[in-house]
Image (cartoon, rainbow, N blue to C red):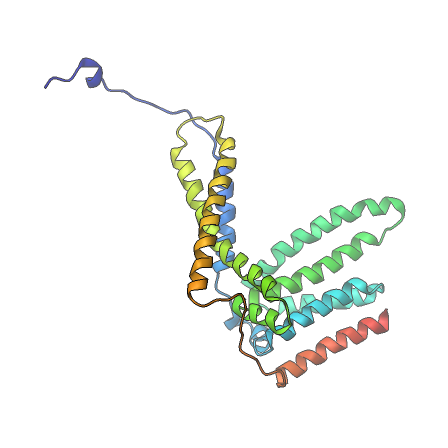
Length: 269
């Protein structure tokens, strides 16, 4: 069998260089998020978190909520500064890795709050930016520290201990689980798009909608499979958690601290 001349002629294709900033940025961002979700918590090097681990998650949730409400309803900035000092002291007692994980989103929210509050300076409210930034720092740092130092299954049990409805707990539980599952699916889709993007493609950004559509179909299929699996394992929509002892010394000390914060907020007004 003799090959034709056109088939025996060698061809070289040198695709023009093209940027893949859309794909690279999204891969890096999703990878960072997944690393934070699956990262091990460095509690073994933090004496503060080892002490707080003995406190009931329900009590810790209630304490953080009470602190945030007190900071936002109190008009006296002295209380906000006191809470800022407490938040900074708690932050300083933690390891460097955990400090970085808490500070990065906290400072981002503070910057956004500063941008939002800056126009108030032109109408005479000169203290509004400082007030908003301080409150945002306290609230966000406390919430992120709680989320980063308490395992998610204990937080779910803490929500049920506070009487949160099962439907709300179910949404929170499934959302956290799907962050990892859908994040890895999105990374696979972006990798596939990058491998198929040869040369210059002016329509590459249009693939974002197709990626989201494919991700939605995967999410729908995985949610259906997960619901069927949970039903087969006897899940009837109710979360049953083990009752924890409330009358312990760590719980009592934490409750006294929360009571002192509430009393100080009421005194300063």
